[in-house]
Image (tube, rainbow, N blue to C red; front, top):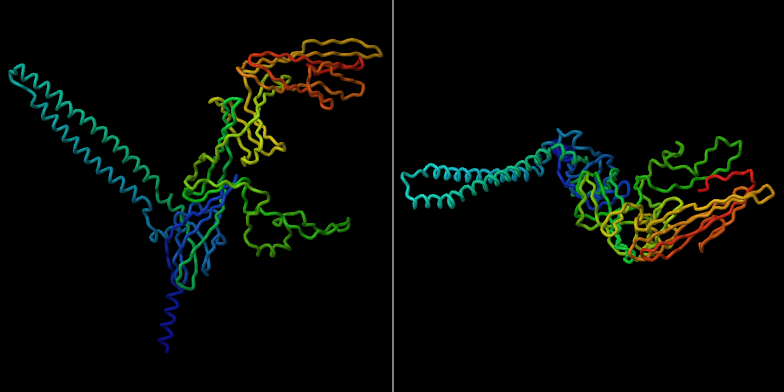
Length: 520
């Protein structure tokens, strides 16, 4: 009986007291990258035995911030701890493959060294042949026929040998460079670089089983931003918009052959809405009562700490509707390198208009108005403007406009010239200790383009801030005048190579002891 009990105890100790090691590889199943931050959905499988298991997970990537609550399993096991390989590498060094992909590199180096050795042998034979020929070229009292044959020999056989020598020398140089490239790669692919991607998961199981694990890994160092190239071939053609994304991630792994989604907005593991709490009405005698209704759950008093301590890990909540862009599965996003990916390309029907405010600057801008822009799902970002194959500048795309058309400035056009001048100023007394000042302006527009344009010109007259001062528009020259703002707006069609002149003015009536300033 004692022997049976002892055997049973030995079996139990052997099953549940031993430490088991297994090696597996992590797989990335999906990536979501936000304007700031991201999520990687990962998985791996491992065969565990009764007792404590050390699961060595290769190709996991950077693992800062990973904790045991991140690992979800399909079987009943206890996840005890997660650690980086570098923490206790001496415990696991003999349990994992030491060479990783270095075997491929070593094989390549050996191959090219063998090829180089073959080239060296061939070159030695060619040089030996050249040496033999050169030593036996001396002829005693040669005839003219023998001399011609020797010359012909040099021009054929010897020349071919020289060419072959040069060709082999070049091949040896190229092959040597290939060996150097692979050796450099071998040096870069050091054990520390590969082992930095390894984590060790401590798991306890009560039986032998295969366990599938899933992880949502939060990335702090990941981002993307929209980027556009807008092309115009003239005001009679639609705009061509290339919609692109500049993407960067620092997971330590290459993202490829997986669904990758780009999402606008910033990601945060604590991106969740506030919850209303009880709202106590306070009076001036209730200073000790603390209202919590307008505070974050993470800022509340210690009386609620226990309640929130048992809540699950914060999940991402959408505070606003987000735009998701799914990239093609062939997309590859390396770690630590910013790439540019094409998202879409389309033509948009556009209304063009030129715009100028010569009071501020003598530049005329080409504006493009895009109708129904919401259907293109554009996001705010920078755009390079290319007009007739020439990049003219960079603008900011802002689709968050409250109008039915989105306005894009395509930059200034040097072929449409404007000039504003104060051509006349008069001052006269009008009695009752008052005076009147008159100002007259001319604006000249010259269209040097070979096509007609529509131009919106904007100017203004001042507004009175003193009830003793009165301002009157003298000549609007068919402008649309808004008295409340003082703005004058002209919409003018100007033919090719045409020059137009706009004239307007205003009178200022004021006490004679007042002096106007800033009128130019």
